[in-house]
Image (cartoon, rainbow, N blue to C red; front, side):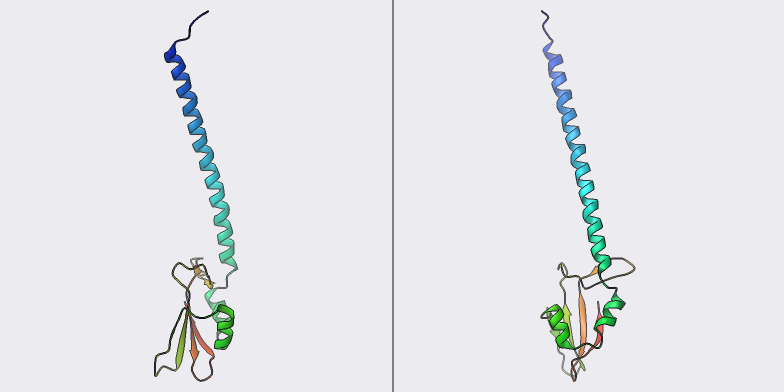
Amino acid sequence: MTRQDPGRTVLIIAVVAAGLFVGAGVLASAVYVLTYNRVEKQQKAAVEQLPTRDEFRAKWVGRTQGEVVAAFGRPESTDDSQGSPTITLHYGKLFGDQQYARDPVAGKPLNFVRFEVTRDGGRVVGVEF
């Protein structure tokens, strides 16, 4: 019966452990890339469903302040400066989840919107992002 060299045994264990470590790293990287790509595609598809700035404006100009509030809830803030013929309704937060429209050039969602509403009739006369 021959006795195996202890140094060789340690070397074999080290090689097997390194192989398992590298394999686990490759597997983890593959899972991350596949998951990231799937999530990125879902997010892009969701943004493409949003109206463009012009489509959003066309839908809301002429509507009433009540319709805006019914659709989006209470505004984050309002600007009711005396002497101004309009009231501005501000919606959105810098890091909010609400997305109102998309920038057709950049393909990015727009998280802020301002509605200019007339004082005398409560009609939307302008929409800015």
